Length: 164
Length: 263
Image 1 (cartoon, rainbow over the protein chains, first blue to last red):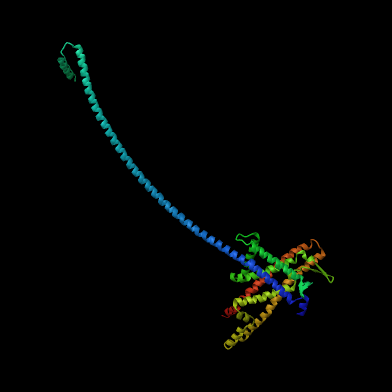
Image 2: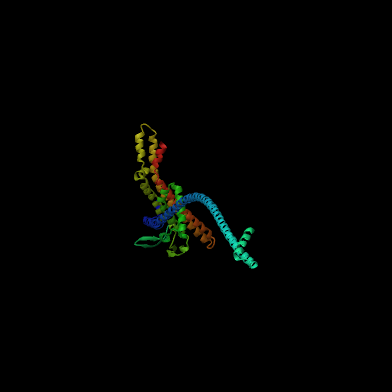
């Protein structure tokens, strides 16, 4: 043992100093590098796993929302189709009603116009009769200036009546 | 020289070149730790990434030995500290600073010599490992169980209790007790094996480089330098792994295994 100690110059003081050196290394590495870094890595790992978890939850939520959206879309499309059909029906009914009404109105206007025309025609005929009568009277008067006017007029009226 | 040379002394305390190297190694590690601490960020810088890579790899190796992440997390700071301390010490010996020194009694004494090329350093690490492992065992599984590992009182008690029914206990339990005593020798052997292995490898490397440089100063020693870089790394890994193994064994309750075997 003594031979080993003297050959290798083993000295307890040097061993203690080297132990202290190692203790410093351990303390510094643990306190300033390993502990904070391990903490940071754990935090990062937690953040990442939380992120992955959130992403999975969000994916489920997105899928659910999409399914809900599709369902609502189908419902909305159905409602829109029903509404469109109803509207079309209503519009058709209204169109038919309006058409009927306008036909009736037009017929009424036509009838009124006809009546008015008839009346005007009759009135014109009457006026024409009078005018013709006057004309005939005057013409006849010219031709038969010698006859008294009262006879002439009676004759004229008689002639006109015979004409018609 | 088999031993580190004294450069000077302070109040009769010898300051050797290996000790100076160790202090430089400590300084390097302190600066490194300071830089890592300063640059610490959630989005890692290159140096932090490299350190994280080493940590993850080391912790993975630790897990393979312990088989338990929580135990690995307790042992790993010690193993990694041992690893860095030995690695920096090993590699410092390869730097050309060894050319600076003083001539004393006609012999050249370099200012720096690899810390691990001095048996005092490796012995200190070996003693720390063995004593540290036992303290770790006491903290983890309890003082009584650690005590029984070396002085197996439980075995003697079992022998006294079961001898009448099981006469074979008279043979088996004293063997268990004797195995405990052998464990003490084993612990001393661990110190010797750890310290001499590391010292031998690093010192042999230095001798090899010196011999090669003496034979052909240029180019020829270069491959050996690379070899020594590798040897320095491997020795640091081996020592750190053995520290992990010893601490892991110390944290394991062997009396449970014996009880299981007997059942």
